[in-house]
Image 1 (cartoon, rainbow, N blue to C red):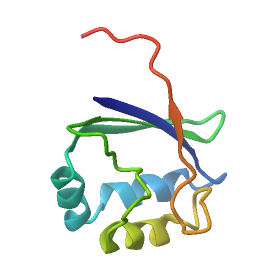
Image 2 (image 1 turned 120 degrees about the vertical axis):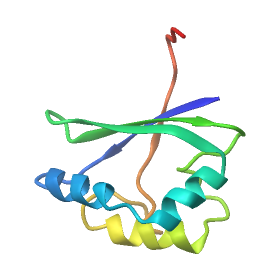
Image 3 (image 1 turned 180 degrees about the vertical axis):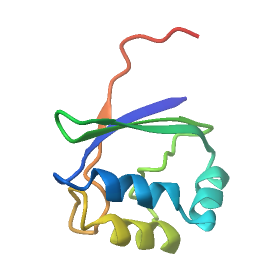
Image 4 (image 1 turned 90 degrees about the horizontal axis):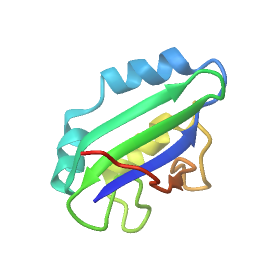
Length: 104
């Protein structure tokens, strides 16, 4: 299964967002992979400050799942909350996107 979603970056935070992801914590990467997420990309639209994420998932879960959040993910959300639009629990406001075309 592929999962696509969008999030919103606060204006002027592009460089900081890129920096934090360039230095992503090894334990977070490992945990995401352990949950069955692979081939994960995030794209940035400079005109709208929208981030577009796409990932392959081996089950019905994905990296944006807010049910049963582990401490590593919660710590990452807290770390990123100052530069993104977030929910009250600091999870990023995530809007799933409907797939309308796919070419393999």
